[in-house]
Image (tube, rainbow, N blue to C red; front, side, top):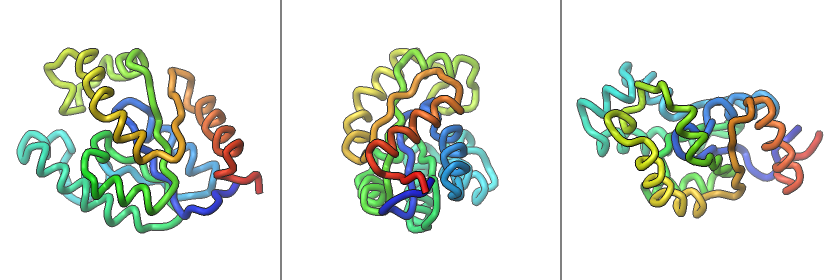
Length: 180
């Protein structure tokens, strides 16, 4: 399979939408490199995203995220999983929309709850009512994901290998990829 028209694919969506899992599978199937903005931030800083949030706060993390996205979005041949809040900044949305194919992975609330039930690493999920939190994220961020997306894919609790087949079929139907 080969990606048409764009040099890279950017995955957007809320936490627990499968951006990293599906991104790795998609990159492998298309013969592209996979990167994750959060992992790249951790590599360059030497500390976890959670620690950056705790010590520096969310605005400082978003600054790091924007710089990382600016650098990585120029690289061709990439599947890039973005952080769930990357779309909050206009400059990030513009970079994504103009530099690659943007796929919005859209989970339902039940999928997010199931996938994060035992999660203790995500800073925004600590000490909150997760259902209410995910509902509020969906309300505020869904329009931003929709704004930047070329393709929206509903995500459920199917295993990654079954989900990636659905994503690839959708991309082929819409002629974003060819069977070459």
